[in-house]
Amino acid sequence: MKIAIVSDSHDRADLLERAVREAAAAGAQAVVHCGDVIGANTLRAAARIGLPLHVIHGNNLGDPTALYALAQESCGLVRYHGADARLTLADRRVFVVHYPEYGHAMACTGDWRLVCCGHSHRAAIDQVRNVKGTLTWLVNPGTVAGLAAPATWVLGELETMSFAIRTLA
Image 1 (cartoon, helix red, strand yellow):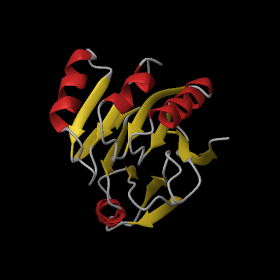
Image 2 (tube, helix red, strand yellow; image 1 turned 60 degrees about the vertical axis):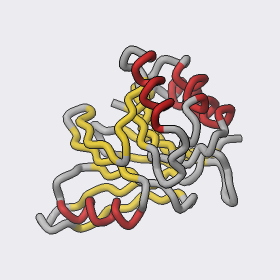
Image 3 (cartoon, one colour; image 1 turned 90 degrees about the vertical axis):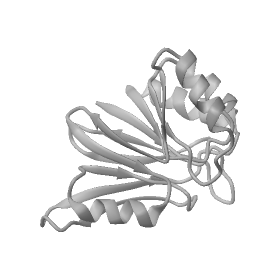
Image 4 (cartoon, one colour; image 1 turned 120 degrees about the vertical axis):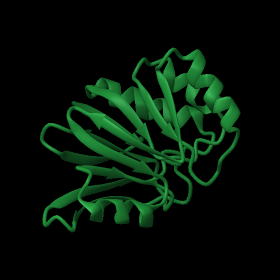
């Protein structure tokens, strides 16, 4: 299963939609948004593409009531998880949080195959040695809004656990 990992869209609905379109064209079956959506309307154009969107809010909370309402009206297409998310995608346990230091801590537990985070606006793909003696993937897609950094997102393949940073043209 391929997924798109995005973060820090900061009300840039146009760039988020472009990243989700690119991901869908590349075969992605779901989108994980690591926070700082800001407004629920930021998600509407991306949701029309038809991929399930798993969303957390980040530190720029915006309007959580509107995010919950959008999730309800989307009939399950938009899934608003609050401050963090615990997902199972393609039999892989995935943890989603906004802050990289929390992401690193969760990767260290060894309870997750993949931890996704954002906030720093710096794209990075790392493996973290965990307390169980194995490695956990820690992926930060950067900022899809291109704020003080290139507009980036990550395409992940969960079957092979391979990830690639993509830059919006």
